[in-house]
Amino acid sequence: MLQTILEKLEGLGLSLPAAAEPKGNYLPYSISGNTLSLSGTLPLNADGQLIAGRVGGDLSIEDGYEAARWCVLNALAYTRVSTNDFKGFDRILHLDGFVNGVDGFTDAPKVINGASDLLVSLFGDQGRHTRVALSSNGLPLNAAVETRMLVVLK
Image 1 (cartoon, rainbow, N blue to C red):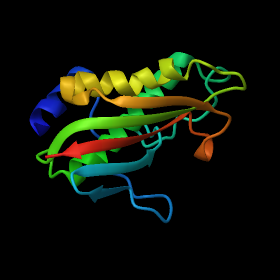
Image 2: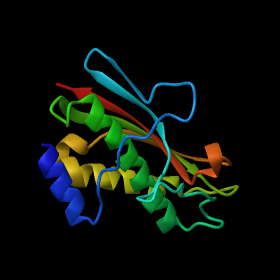
Image 3: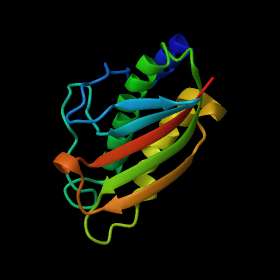
């Protein structure tokens, strides 16, 4: 499965980053039974730079969409580590998406589609998930987006 995911990412002009060290006193992921719970991930791009700002203000919906994709890529880096290169992966169960939007921003679902679309592109039906897409007036480090995922393991 890993080779297929890497090939699909390459076809999209993307790659899977290395799993970053946590920035605080928390676990990047935990496993209970057959559920992998991933902590919130921020949009660190290929250069390790945080995509920051408020969507609907200094960032467009398209910028937010791209930031949501980077959140998922960073979450998948932890998924790769925790599932032995996706050998223990079954499916994406749930995605929470938080958008750092300007006051009154109501297009959070359009932004979080960046994460959902990428998951379905990579995993097909195993990437379809339930989700929450919310707008907030602030996220850690002024990140544009933060996502959290639940994954079902084999």
